[in-house]
Image (tube, rainbow, N blue to C red; front, side, top):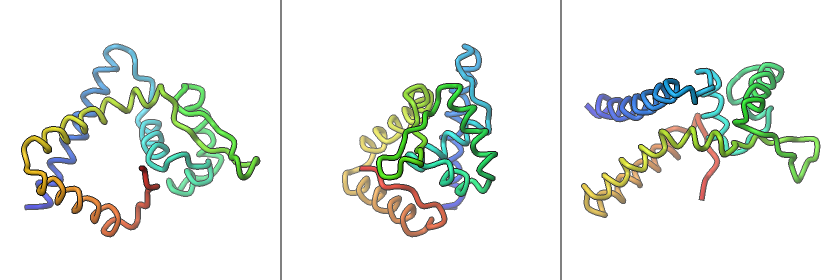
Length: 149
């Protein structure tokens, strides 16, 4: 039962995002391929990774990763930023253009979170947050993410 309900929630978030993206196709605003969209989601989640960190995470060669990244740079969704500690290294930084695109789905997440806060008592919301933190931090160790403040 838990698995089914969790899958339904996850699916609804995905479907909301896909529907919004298709709406952008109708307006000719979307210019990311499916694979590029996945790449952008990964880069954003990793929080300014290097090309090597990205290619290692995805499990593709550095030249293949560089090709995908260069396409995203040309489309204006990411830019390279030189590392302050190692001038030979560049970090991938998501641009405002992608953030605006990404906010299609993040806006819905905010809507659902607001509804949760209105529907449930504070102590239940705190418990949901605690449980999700445990799931993320302890039960999903295969996918480490940088901590955001």
